[in-house]
Length: 493
RNA sequence: GGCAUCGUGGCCGAGUGGCUAGGCAAGGCUCUGCAAAAGCUUGUACAGCGGUUCGAAUCCGCUCGAUGCCUCCA
Image 1 (cartoon, helix red, strand yellow):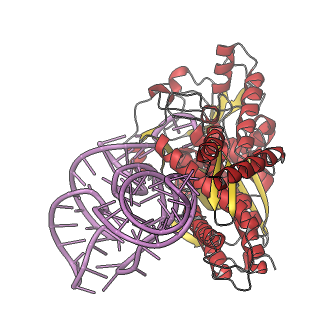
Image 2 (cartoon, rainbow, N blue to C red):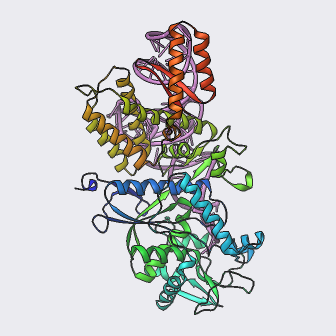
Image 3 (cartoon, rainbow, N blue to C red):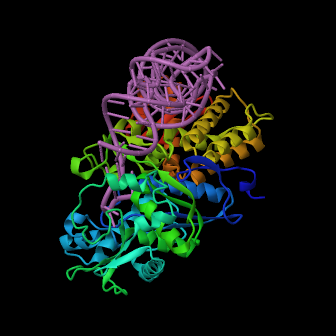
């Protein structure tokens, strides 16, 4: 029996604003779409948080036994810089500035994106489609919406008629906005002469002669509007209605609202059953922005090459830090917060190492089954990773007590605890045990064991100068010795 | 200006109408040759001002502040 039959998952649905019981459209299968990055620069750390949240969600759904088709797109065309710059494509602009082919820009930053995500130990999505690879599908949707009278063509561009759509549908239901309010509060914007109304959005934009990224269409050469690619790719691979659509909070309006409008206009039904939105990442209490310098790239955290943090932090530490907050909360990154997470992360990893070495007894002073269910309860409650981690630390405490000989664990419970600790830490949270991999060769541990033996002999001879020298020199190399009841162990940082 | 979300102890963060979150940091104790590690233990919270209630940090109102969105930024 798959786990999902006994573990009842509840998910916060942005569309209803409530936590709802999750059951997929087709028993045993989950379709999930997440809006991916626009590959015109290095991946933003906040962007990584969003994708990490959905990586964790993907991992947990799989763990529950669902067969998950996870689609995360690459936006390699279609984003405009802004209206003031005559609607120039973001990628084309970058290409012009860097004197590169647009696809060279796309390739460079796609590689960067995958490289960073791989360091963060992300699972690859099932399908990673590109916008430029789905131009035909996008054109078909535009034709369909035009046929239904919910879009209009002006000078080779096609716009979605929001007012007309709103007569029979509810535009703004996801973001809690009303069309009347939007009309009343519209800012003055340039270059919108073509649109019937400022609320209308582009499905297809005419390409000016100097525009490099262009495709032929029934309306002349041009390129698709940004919102359309997600509608085309999500419905192509997941169907006209699918289970989960995710993305950052900032995409709720207008992007996701427009996706709903496009799909309802074209297919006549709401495309998504559960809308999920991950919250923003701030740094030192302020939003992250290149313009103010309050910004850091993931790679700069890993190498320590930045002016903001006191040292380098590994991808697993950053991952642990992010998992300590709920995905729907604003999370604030700071040097102190990362230092605290680093210690907590090491404590957890060392405890998992220690668990394997514990001596077993006849009884267990620790209810493993109910503890494990608490871990599931946390995850079932809208993927509450901070509560899960609190439960993992509860187990850490017991592991240490058993190590001290103050509690006992049976052989079978030890195996069960080990399985659960590894499952939740590595499989669900996606952490990696870095100290274990550093120590893999066995040569290091042989050398350190020898030094531990020499130090033990020195201590027995009351030669504390020698014993402290061994301890301090190893410490300077990042190898910490720990004296316990059962002898001395060590950890590598 | 409008809409939305949020404001928890030294720091990061869960949670919630009455019951310990957790991690890090700080103090005390145990252990130790001394430390570290580990265990035990202690303390300052729920932005401010009103209101509802037997009881609110949790519900309502206002104020202040933060973050996001308001035509293409995750």
